[in-house]
Length: 394
Image (cartoon, rainbow, N blue to C red; front, side, top):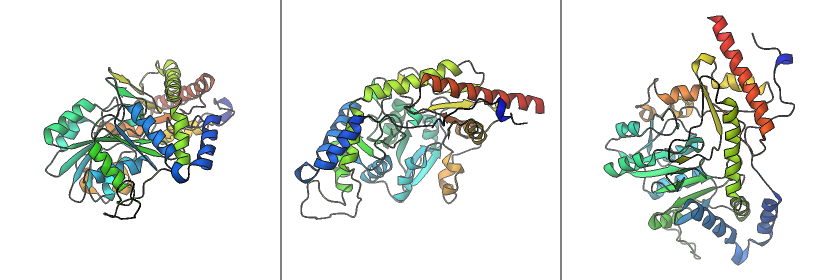
């Protein structure tokens, strides 16, 4: 029986699951760009934002684009991925990681994730390599880091391209190298929910000058950078970021260290309050990894009797917003017409269980210790109720 509302822990104000930190600096710089980013100054803010990102990640090149999806689209197109090719990808990720592969006529090959970091399983990658495999895509899920040394060794051994989707991991690092510095190239997102937020927006980064030149060519309708004669050599894409968005990014990057510190503090508050809950797993930080904890993610064991949607409903009734762990792409209607993509997926995959029960707890920059106290108390109440009802039913 459901707990009566009078007995429930309910937030007096709606607690959102995500949200940015925006100050007067962002507003002032965006207004400045709206007034001045024209004529010969039209790319000044983009160039500044790109340099800040390249310097922060530790790579030679960065290109601003409308979103991470377009960055990935450009990467795969620049690498020559197309019809007849296969790209090995994690089954559990947001669809934006994989959609560009399909748009280019190639086939994504879905494989399992690791049970702790929730990133692509290198052993599953190795098992899925075939004669049509051209690339591997690793996704740094929720701020976790892929096992990039293992993935790079596989890619080198088989002559494959390795691509990093770092959309959710700005500020994370592995063995001293920041997210975005692995593989041939990487993509970042600045969606309003992300660690650095510009509303929408993305960044392509790479240490490969030739790949960088190819991306610059493809993102502007197949024209050479600086072309003033509108001579298109290929039918390509229109993937440029506007100056006002870039100005917002500059203001955010000016305080990137403080933003990352806030994210890590939010996770520490959750960890202090939930680490003693039996059968509950939160984001991990393996040796050598510094996790920026974009989203605080909770995975309850089966004994609680919840799936992610029932957990979300219970938290919603307490005026607390949550998000579901990404569903396996293999389970989505969008992939019903791609049976070949699912040939390595099984019902016993780690990702199948994790994605069935996991949720993201409120992780926006508006979170305080008091709000985390309330969320954790409500979450513990929900879990305790689920376990009690399950035992009673048995």
